Image (tube, rainbow, N blue to C red; front, side, top):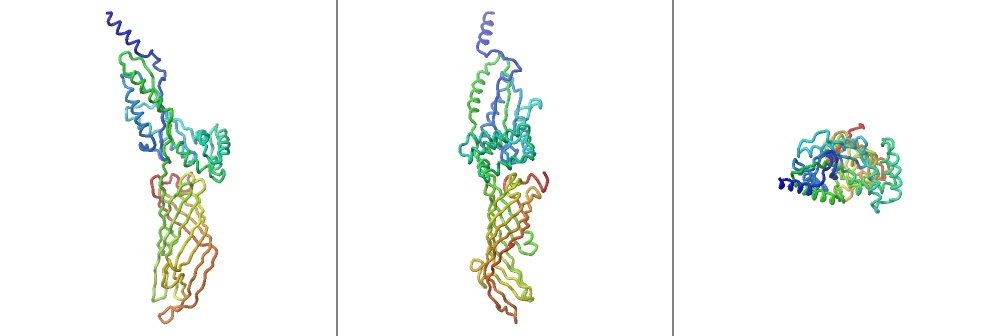
Length: 419
C-alpha cells in the first residue's frame, strides 16, 4: 500500500501540473511558399521541405499516449499585389485546400477543426517588408504611399481603387520592379497554424520529450529565412497570320527577360516564281525587337496585354507581276551583303484566347532604306532599267500573330475580355 502511494506521489511531482482540457497550450506556426500563380505544393521550393518535416513530427507525437492533442488547424492566406483581387482570393482558397489535403495523410481531420482566413492583397505585409529593406528605391515615398493604401483598405479593397496602378506608376515603376523581384515572393506564402490542447495524462512520461521538441520548434520559428526567388520561364513561339495569308512562311520566338521586358526575333522566307509568266514573289529576312509590356494584363501575367518596342529588320526581295519587277538588294548576293533595312517603333496588344494561345496585334512606324533595282522582261531576259535608293518613312509593319505560350507557369488565367 505504501509503495503504491509513493509511486503516485512520484508521478505527480514529475509531470507538469494539470491544465484545462480545452485550453490551447501549444501552437506551431509555419510559412509554406508557393510558386507564382500556383496552388500545388512544391516540397522543393524554398525551405518547404524542412517545414513539412516539422509538421509531420508534430502530428506524429500527438497520439493517444501524448499530453498534446490537435484541436485546430488554421490557414491564413494573403497575396502579393500583382494579381487581380478575384484571382488572388480563388488562388488563396486553393492553396488552403492543398494544405488541408496534405495534413489529411496523417489521419482524418474533421472540417470543424479547419479554418481559412483570406487577407486579400497583403499591403500591410508589403509595408513591413519595405520598412525592413533599406535598399528599396525611393523608400520614403514608397512607405508614405503604402501607408495611405493600408489606411484606405481597412474596410476592404475595391477594384476601382487601382492601388496596384498607384504603386506601379510611382517613379516610373522603379520601386515596383524592385519589390516585384525582391519582396513579392515573401508575400506568396500561406501561414499554417496548428493548435494543440495539453491534457492530463498520469500514465506516460512521453510529454517530457515533447516539451523539448516544442522548444526546438520555438527556436526555429524565431527567424524563417526567405526562400530564393524563382523566376519562371516565359517563352512564346508565333507566326504572323497576315504573312501566312500572302504565302510567306514565317516563324518567331519571344523570351521574357523580367521586369516587363522581353526580346523577340522573327524570320520569313518565300521563294515562289512562275518564269513562263514572269511572275516572281520572293522575299526573305528577319527582325529583332525589344519590347516593354504595360497595363493590367501585363501585371497579371508576362507576355500579355499592351506592349511597345523598337525593332530592326533586314530583308531582300524580288517582286514582279508580269511586267516591271523590283529587286531589293544586290543581284546575285545574299542578305548579308546588300540588303534593305527597317528601323521602327511598334505598338501592340497580346490577347489571350486559350490557356496557352494568344493573338498578338501589332503595327510599326519607322524608316525603310536601301538600294533597289527595276527591271523588265524582254526576249527571255530580264533587262535592268534603273538603280534607285529607297528612303521611306511611314507604316512598316502589320501583324496579327498566333502565339503559342511555352514554359512552366506560362498559362492564361483570364481568356479574352472576361474579368
